[in-house]
Image (cartoon, rainbow, N blue to C red; front, side):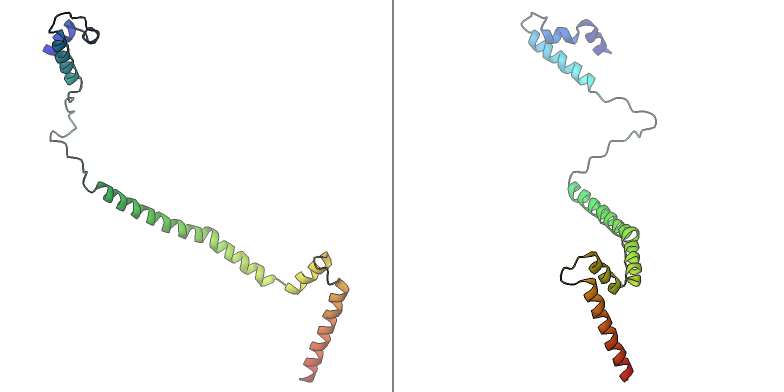
Length: 146
């Protein structure tokens, strides 16, 4: 209550600007500024839903280790989850596509296609077909002997 009375008599601007010319005015200004600052930073009254006990002290000792441990557990769990998600969403479909490709892949026909396209300069399609016919004759002879 008395602080409001002091505030009404002397504004903080007057205190800061030094409107007092008394020799003790500096001491008085500092004291009044301290009082005003103390009142400004005073603890507000507690609301009805808050507890009336003291506030708990903050945990400072071992806080970094506890936070690091907690973040390590979270990051480990997240990485395991992401690994399983990647395996199911990317790895397994890719594996099935490869299996389907190699199930129907004909390397002989693919080589023939590359020769026809001219990727190989040492062999022509006629040479390839002649060699293919020679191999077929040899296979027939081998099958006829048995």
